[in-house]
View (cartoon, each protein chain N blue to C red):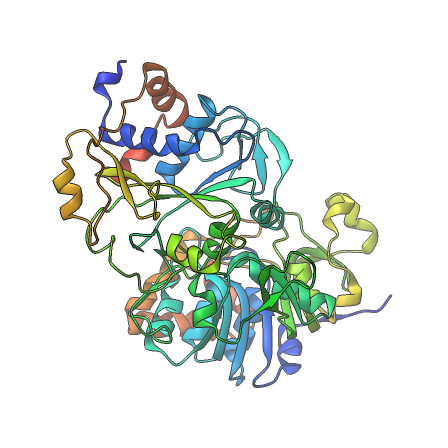
Length: 283
Length: 255
C-alpha cells in the first residue's frame, strides 16, 4: 500500500490561489484546524471555502483569505453565531452561496457522483433561490411534472478533513458519534488531505472501533497528516471535547482588534502545530 | 401540586406541546429549551408514540430530562445528521424553530437582517434547515419576544416560506407545507383561516387581546371569542416539574 504521510506545510504547498476548498466537520466539531492554521500562515488568497461552517470559516474570513463562502450555516455550537463570520458578512465584500443544510449535502453528493445536480424540494418558496440566482429549477420528466430545485454539484479542488485514526495509506476512521459529511467532502474533491489524531497500522483499526467506523477509503485520499489534537479547539470525541474556554477567548477577539492581534500573534502565527499546542498548554 | 399554581412558562410549554397533538409515530424535533420541554411533555403524556433525538446522533427510547448534561440515553435508532436529513425529506417529522422576524403568512427569517443581502446589517444563522423543513415536514415556532419588531409586515429574508409564497407555487409544491402553531410569551397563533393569514388562537392568562394586537406589526385575524391558553393538568405539571425539567432550565427564558 502507498505511504501518504506528510505534514501541514506539505499540504499547503499543493494549494494555490483561487482554489475551491471544502472543509469537513460540522460547526465547531472535528474541524481540521491544524490544516486551517497552515493556510492562515501561507500567502494563499481568493479562496472559495465550502463548509458546514465553524471557526474554520470565521478564521479564514477574518484573515482575508476568502473570496467566496458556500455554507448552510456558520456556528460555534455553544456560541450559536460565529462572531468573526458575522463581521466579515456585515462588512460586505465576500460572495456567498447559502444553501439549506440538507440541500448542501446533495451538492456534495452530486459532485461525488459526477452528475451536474441533484433535485430536491428545499429552496422552493424561500429566498435561497432569490439570493442565489445561479440556482435553477427543473421540471420532472415523468408524468408528475413536478418542479424541483436542481442543486448544483459542489465540485471541490481540495477537501480537508480530520479523522480520529488513519493509516499511512489514507484509510480513515471516525470514532465519534457522527462522521457528518466528511466522506462526501473527500469524494467531491480532486484531492483530499486528511489529518488525524493518530496514524496506526491498518491491522489495528478493529482494535479502535467496529468495521462501520472505517469510513474513508484511501482511493479518495492524497495525503495523511498526523496531528494529535489537530481539531483543537473544536471537539473530537472520544479523544477530547471542545475547549470551551479557548473558544470563548477566540470569539471575544471579534470585538477587540488588540485582542485579535494578540490572539493571532500568539496562536495563529505559531510556526507549526506543535508550537501552537505549546502555546495552548502554556495558558 | 395543582394546576392552579401553574406559572407562565408552564402554560407556554403546554401551548407548544399542543402543537404535537395528533402527530402519532413521527420524529418530534423541537430546538431550544422551552420547545424541548414541550416535545418531551407531549411524548410523556398524550403522544407516546413519537420518537425523539438525544441531541447527538441517536433517537433515545426514554424521555430524557432537559438541562441535565450527561443524562444517559437508551438508543433506539442511530440517527446521524445524514439520516436526519433523510427523515426531513420523508416528511415524518415535526420541527420547532425560532424566528427573528415573521409576517402575517408565516414567512420566517432567522438568516439575516437588512435589505442588502451582500452586506447584511446583522448576519444571523443563515438558511440552516428552514427551506427544507418548511416544504417537507410540519413546522411550529417558539418566538418568545412578541413585539412589532419581530412580527413585521415584511421580513428581510425568507428562510422558511409562509403560506402566500406556497400559494404562488401551487398545490403540488405546497402539499407537505404545514405551519401548525406559533407560540409567543403573549399568545398562541395559527393559520387556520380561509386565506391562511395568522390568527390569534389563544391568549395566555393575564394577557389581553389588545396587548397582542398592539405588539403585532400586521393585522391579525381575531375570532369573536379568543379563549385563554389552557392550564396544565395536575399530571402534566408533575411530569414537567419532576421528570422533564427538574432543574427549571425552561425558566431561564423568562427571567
